[in-house]
Length: 234
Image (tube, rainbow, N blue to C red):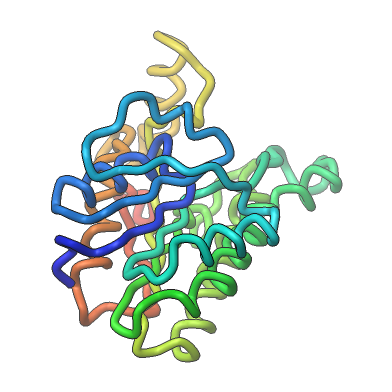
């Protein structure tokens, strides 16, 4: 797909990976709508990006937004949908574990309500994470949710062809999702990635490049593209 002149909707598009994807799409000439619960997080955005407010867990709001912006060619969701429970499974707060699945429900809302408005030769991308296939201790919630997202994509992709549907799975990525600052932040990422084949945190732009790849390559669907610095082989 040549994205120039195409209309793209990016949920979670006002920070981190989603914002990076929005900017890369706009730089290539796409007409981008960057959507989140708090669009002000995007700051100043370049020409070609329009900010929109929407909560992916609010089905009525998602439906109304799609009807307002339809039709479109590219649909991306990097929206987390909510908080992530951490810790080992036997010690985990089960309400927190259940709440972690807000990400899955947000993706499901975007996918079900948005797909009918995607052009027949259009493309959809969701974002999961490396723990879906190689979980580390304390990552059971994010691993389970990510695994469900990847299974959802494999199941839905054959149903919506010729539209394409893929997943991008990041490893440890330095984004605003982490609240740590300064030396504490650097040390946390150093420990997380010390055993990776590429021992550093990735950047939002590096993940966005993978999102652009599955958007632009018309021969890729129903698959997961890893951007993890070798996490799965570490």
